[in-house]
Length: 327
Image (tube, rainbow, N blue to C red; front, top):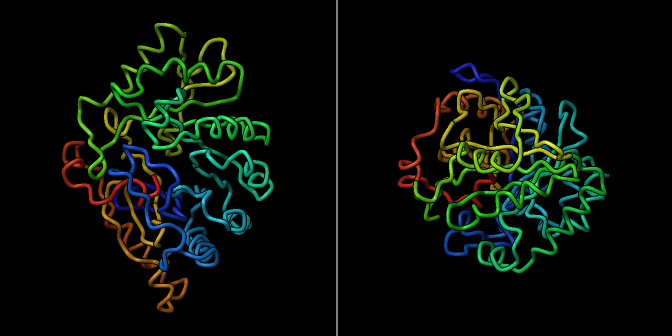
């Protein structure tokens, strides 16, 4: 799957629910919870497997399971096993808020999951509750321990950095990787529908790196740019782990984007910030063959924009909150 700008798409981010058991302020404005796994249009494990098989046939090699919060689905392990068994899928990953991870890390590893990201925006209980609407920080930290014990190394910890909210914890997060194989990834605050984004709330990557470098020598290491990776990676002197930066606002990486997204109700998105496109789940229900589904995916990919709009335009025109997209 090569688009009109020469970008080869090998990575599928697959939302399996739009429900989340947390209500993070930047993701779900107003505390919206999504419609959850009871939604009539939520894709079944069989539908998910079939869609991934079609995408694998088109060249997708990596699948990341997302949500909402994917661990709220009772059939998560079945979904993971099905995807892991599809020919052509070389890497199966998952992003979670970690609340249920302590009991799921080892079973997920056994089911075929290879890579794991945990979203965590504060290490302070009161602040964690203010950001997420929940007091489950201890459960998340136990989940991180369980993931490391299950062999997810390096374990990625995603931190959305917001000025005046949690940016004073940057060094505390760096310290997570001092003695453990944790890759802390600092993500620039992005605008989504009604999440209150402003340029003033953004902490650009270079500022974050400068703050870290004043205490810890940070050495850039080989990035994944040639393979479509988006992180800027740094080794920290004396640390087992590393730190990375995801920079969609201050230093966009649209020119090497290799991702497609399928929302929890089966719609294809070619860009995180683009409107949802063709309804693949509905096409399947209507009897579309795998060849017809492939043609739908290819034709939608032809409409992928060269880059996303500027942040202020995204703030004013974004049509979906983050929890309905899948990250």
